[in-house]
Length: 205
Picture 1 (cartoon, rainbow, N blue to C red):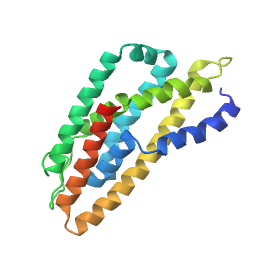
Picture 2 (tube, helix red, strand yellow):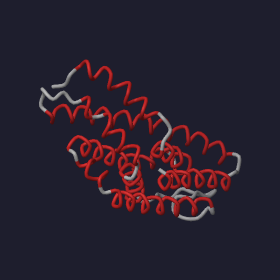
Picture 3 (cartoon, rainbow, N blue to C red):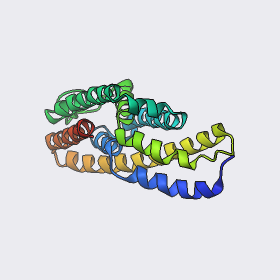
Picture 4 (tube, rainbow, N blue to C red):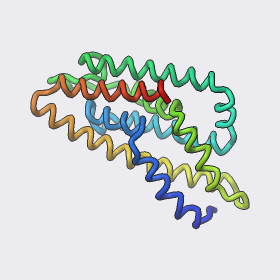
């Protein structure tokens, strides 16, 4: 089904890429800090769908089309960046659905969180570049494509999920510490600032 020699190289490579701080990991830490790990899972599911879409597109050649039409890709990045910046500003001001209060126990909309993760993954140019340059070499042309691609994408998603959980858990620990000390406003500003960093990352990359 898959070349085990290539797999032995692929697994540590993809884990190293996943654990490296980036837009998606920063977003996971930010939401873990402000809304907790459980509710951050909705964002993670969206991010995983986005990563899977990018990985499949890279192998199927769709990524080449995206890179040849940068205006459409740039528009997607701008829309995603504006959306994240809007959320970040509201969090900084302790407003909006993602900001927390001393009495916070409400549920955030899962679809909103899911969309955040999906847009961030799809609009991440570094994700596209990685998938285009690194994923195809791990495909053995003498073997059927579908089983190999399915297996490699599954490994990528597992690695991404583990790393996002680590970042979100770390963010939750920081959030609990600040909340217990009554620094809710500071927590919102840290979370909002990190969200703005993700937005600027999108604009600048």
